[in-house]
Structure formats: C-alpha cells, structure tokens
Amino acid sequence: MAGWMQNTGRKLGLLPSDSDDYYYDEPEEQIADVTPIHSPSGRGHLTTVAEPMQRIVTSRPRTFEDAKIVGTTYREQVPVIIDLSEASDSDARRLIDFAMGLTHALRGNLERITREVFLLSPPNLDVSEVTAETHRYGE
Image (cartoon, rainbow, N blue to C red):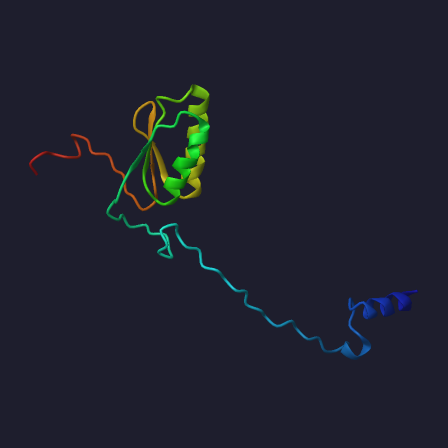
C-alpha cells in the first residue's frame, strides 16, 4: 500500500519523482512589487518636523453625521477644533470616540481645550502649552 501512496504523491507533485531523489530545485526568490504609501498632502512621506500652519478649521457638529466633515478635513492634515456645545450628550460622546480613533489611526493628537472644545492636531503640528512660569514677558 505504501508504494501506491508514493506513486500517487509523485503524480500529484507532492513527492519528488524517482529521478529527483538527490536533487531538489529551490524556488527562486521573487521580489514583490511595492507601492509606496503617500501622505494625504502628496509629499510621498509623513513629515515629523513642524511646518508653518496654513489654516485651522473650526467645526460645531450637532449630530454624529457631521463627523464626516471633521474626518475629511483632518485627513488632509489640517488641525480641527471641535466645539460640541450644540451636540446632545450621546452624540458628543460618539463624536469624541470618533475623534480619538481618527487621531490614533493617523498618529495625531487629541487635546481637550475646555469641557466642550477639543483640538485635533496632525502629527506634523507641535502644540505646546505656555504658562506664566514657562514664558516671561520681555525676555
């Protein structure tokens, strides 16, 4: 019975044929085509150095359906200020969850400015806090 299984395995190409007992062709290494990932700005790479800011968009969403505007703008690496004062509590929670996922996926930051206002900053924007202790006027 073993002979029958070996013959079937050889015919199916699962086992080497009798002439290939001592020599096996190793498969050639193939290099796959790689498509480079481009940033939404079209520069071909994600920048980590702070660049001069061109614009900031302020959004006052009332319902979760308005999140599309926030997402589209933020994907273009434009900072977005979200004012949730006009949204219901349930929609505000959903919008914050969406903003957290969006900033995490695109490696940005989400910062609370006030109780109802948040800043979504892209990774190429450095946002720092200036207080009286860290900045002295006239120096």
